[in-house]
Length: 164
Image (tube, rainbow, N blue to C red):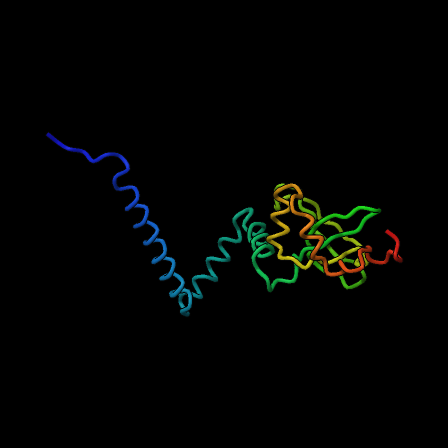
């Protein structure tokens, strides 16, 4: 008579071992990446992976959301004819205009890019990941973003002359 263990008996232990192996291998790869050989491999791998369709887009979105040192992709509020639109400032053209990406909810990977007057742009003093969360939930939590605008204390849009 052969006794077979019940299904799921080892699943918890196997899951824990899998996670441990993943953590150890990630740590070792991180150590290897700090070497000259690892650095050369990373550069070649980056060139190779950049050729994959969609990689640059996904990489850019990840930098906008998670890289606090990347000034492009900073959250902004654009004032337009009595309304406001949330977006990400991608570039300052230096001539009084800015390039702004306006994502379409619930995703950050589609939307439109527009060149707008810098005077209509108000920077949001919140992390990009918080703005991404508001966009993903179709605007739920927008009040938190508006409470943290850089120029929130005057309650007027830029160059409004005090009118609302």
